[in-house]
Length: 331
Ligand code: AKG
Image (tube, rainbow, N blue to C red; front, top):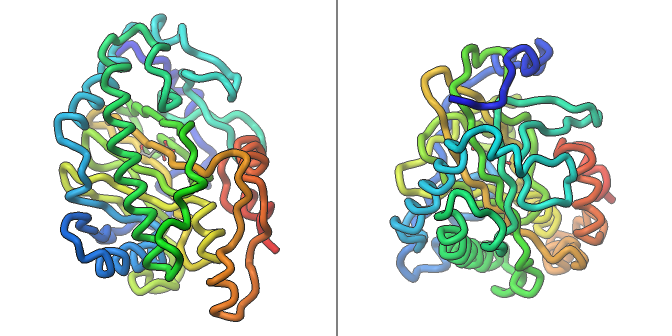
């Protein structure tokens, strides 16, 4: 393939390579969004959110053909000749759509990971003329994914004991999507497709064309962890969507739900394409721990009220490293 990755530049320092961490298997909770027993579904979401910050959803209401069309369009984009993709290349973080092949790490230095990424605003079908199908596939896909995310957020609110509409008013219509492509890697032990990070917003919805690659950091304080932390594979069933909570959910839930740290390992066997849709509060929104939760437990707020837009700016400058991002928010 005519990808833009030059092997020598993607080799990570030894302590950041995937081989230096313990790997294990963890069962990713399955939440069935079908049916109308909202109380039960809400409980399952909150249980998964406490322990993993990650779960998969089935009967999510995103039609199979809508998912298929979106994935095919994404694959077509990455199959374009390198110079056509590079026409969208930019280092300007505010520019969308934007094609890039690198991320910043926590120290502000530029680190290249084994990934190509097309960043899209969710409501700009006019921008890309190639591949032709992408704009048409994007509208129905993002509409259906955001509807599923809204339902999950309502259920999460119920599970936390909040008003069902707690998250409704703040949801941004200007969501962002990462369309990721990880080419086959000659030596997956030397690099990562994406470095360890958390997502800044409320919830992220992920679709992938082949399983394997995404890993979550499992904490020993949960039932499944057994002490310490380890990276485990996030294995989802075909047709399921993978959801993870982001920093704003950890804040609103006053630490009850986990902003899930994750990374992507590469594979020598074949390429993988994934689409991460980020569901965010409005940038002008003030986010704070829910009063009900702070009062109920008598524990005091763990996080400060903050403007989501300001937080996002700091998060992007620091590359998504959890401690650095959360330091801005801690009381
Ligand atoms: C991201 O785009 O931020 C991801 O973490 C992608 C995860 C994946 O490719 O599975």
